[in-house]
Image 1 (cartoon, rainbow, N blue to C red):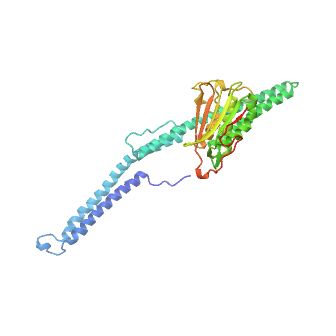
Image 2: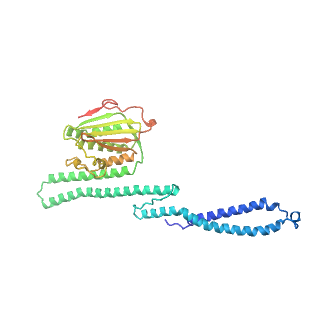
Image 3: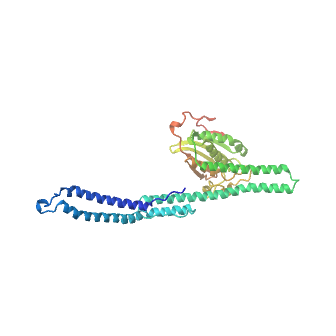
Length: 381
């Protein structure tokens, strides 16, 4: 949108300084006239015949006053121009940095020196914004590259299978259809995960009261067949933990945590514990599972999209797309919560999600009743 160019801020400040100085000089002359010259007699002889009269004083005073007013105007313009330039110099640096960032270079920083003032505070805030923006852009670029690679893989596999089928018409079609179905399912799961991740990154449009204990129960019921198939003891404990957010996203968050805990577990005799409770600082859901020991340097990277630790890669039908904990992190961030991952000394992982508690006046007065009561453990084999 093109706009008509107006006066620069420096020129406006200069005119303001000069105008204020000129007005101040005029007021001073007005004070002299009101409180001094008006009391001088205006006659031919003057006061007692020895002092000058008002006419002579006015003729003597006003030329000097006019010269002083002209000097004040010129001094105000020149001094105001220099002073405004000095005052606006930090703003010029900030503008230059903004234009540099607008051209695509986010590595430039202002790093303004001097004592704290409004311009220094603005420059520091701008540098902080550039830091976050650069990190987010780099993260999105990595995410786009990884997503392109992950989406290209099933498509390349599908094309290879179709090429093989075209070159070998006698190949078993049932096997081909089964493999194509598996590849297609993986591509659909990845696409849905990407869409859900994008939605959670945009933030929440509307919020509802959600009980994390009920969400944990629903996730447990959904994944119970998987737990039974793998022989994992499944235990859901705790009481009501009310928060405010999207029921769909929170259910996906807990489901991803529980599914990760089931898949990345011991081959036999493993356990998964889901616990919900209310703390003074918020509502908590904790998922703890047994498993192989995790290297300490691997744990912080598990929430990055498409990052899979060597010991956590699955080759069976439950192989993930590398977005499970990344989705959890995104949902937690959208709800204003915190996500903590701690490896268990004996092996496995403890994942703790702390979300802001729902206001007390918005929480229903009843406790959710599970199979063993509101506080009893619900164990599943």
